[in-house]
Image 1 (cartoon, helix red, strand yellow):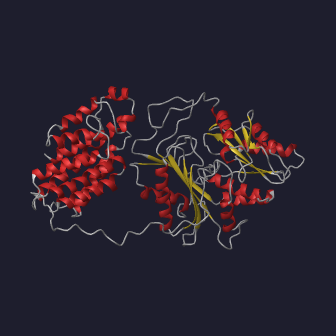
Image 2: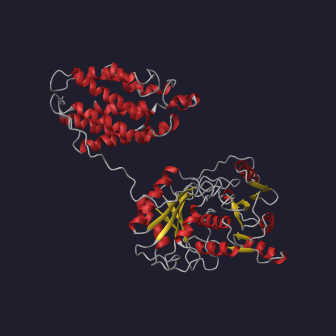
Image 3: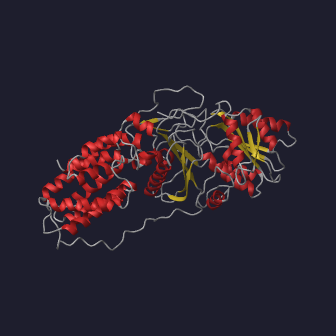
Length: 576
């Protein structure tokens, strides 16, 4: 279900207030409130003006691209509603100059352009271009209504704006923009629809929890295909690129890809508003990898938030098919790339590299492998099979309890404790299955576990577990009296490890942290730790993530500390 809460004064004033906020950010801008036009306050009248716009809710499109090197003006309608012709005409008048004007959008922009031509002394001083880059709707279905304009239009802004900034005339700007627009294909994916401010809320989701939608529009229009369950990116990427690149689907072969290893593209991955940057990076990697699998040359990769659908959790993929040598095109591939690379002084245009993506950027693994632990002087478990069985039980117990630990941590922390512990458990099991933990060398085994905690878990929890396990290995070594570890050696080593851990944290029982059950286990020789784990629900948080949470919420929810609960789960499984 989409997020249905918004921060605003009133839905009726949100667009105007947002545009005023944008003008506070960008001192190049002026704002005409009556027509909701944002435009460059100072302009070179000898250069072509680039005017565009549409409904709001797609920020930074369109007003976020007004500035040197891109748009001269943006005409903004209400949320998901096109501006009327009078607004567009006002936008043209505000930036009218000697070189001419280039406008975009459909009916109302077209009407404004015709009115301008009828009344102007120079009827050819304005040209009108519609950009339709959507490949979701087939040629037959979209034959009358045409293709929708999606994130690819931003690349047309960039190229037209850069060309105008160089002093190109209106015809040159128009022909280049028209050509590039004809070479762009875009497909979108959503995890859910967005919610429009001012509209009624709903308890029903558009999509199931394990479902995504392909081909959806940026105005909450449903897509052409739903996929269930949610596929991995490596499986989704080929499906999306087929919509843009396939020549077998005659309904959608909008771009003339040849698939001969010589196709060259610009890739744009656009965040539709509600996807995390972490996931967007994964999308870029998946799409880039699939393009390489198809022997498609990637000239540029552009990624960021360019055209949104309010808070929609999703993304779109756009490809610009660059011309080949010998193609009839107003600009060469090198020309188009230089226009994309040109500086744009606007808040909406994100930093992009002006280089071809690196073919290889991964640091090769070190040739020097760490030396294996020597068996000389090592401590073996009294029963290696039982030791491995106990470790396996603990790892499985953590995985089984991950949902509950995660639930606790969403209330009492930052929500990642369950997954962090699970990652550590999976790492330990991997080492067991690889034969790196056998029970024949307990000190070496504990060191391996410490390294897993450091690398697989990470964060504060990973550091604490790794410090404790490293100190435990030191304690085992210091207290060893033979070749087999005894209960007495374990007890002394655990006491030493806890003392070492205390030098790195100020948490002491009772503190509502993992220290509470761990200390109880060590100090009471394995007794009392389950009760102390449960007792953390009634303890004031003095350390850990819970210390940052409203104490009244913790009192109301009476949830145990997730870190303490994780320790309880591990210890109970180990000594079962």
